[in-house]
Image 1 (tube, rainbow, N blue to C red):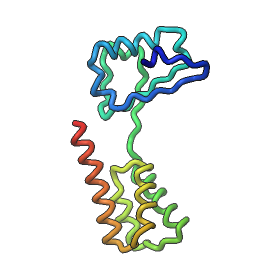
Image 2 (image 1 turned 180 degrees about the vertical axis):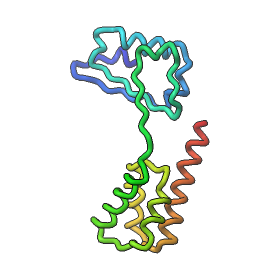
Image 3 (image 1 turned 90 degrees about the vertical axis):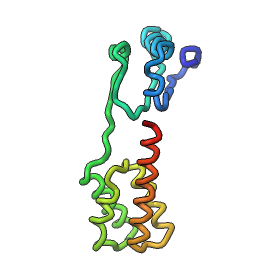
Length: 145
């Protein structure tokens, strides 16, 4: 379908959960053909996968970038900046909150923090909410495996 999409401007396609289809020979052939066909030079395909393995027959055609989760320092900067901007005083608990956000992406941390300010700012509520979100993320990862 991507190869048939004809448009003058550049095109960007996202193939979500590509690892589920990476061993399909038909899909592998289509990816290789996209790479070789000159009329596809303005088409960009981004794949999303929880696994970092690229099939050996596609390694020549695919560039892999691993996007890691934020470090503790990055999480700390994000949380402290949020607390500063919103004038929320949780100084006694900020380290606990920072540790609780370990394993979250920066985007998930931002969304979670925004959801928290809409509610009560009791530390028990905050930590309970963070751990529920973390459990949801872990459950989603387990389902994908």
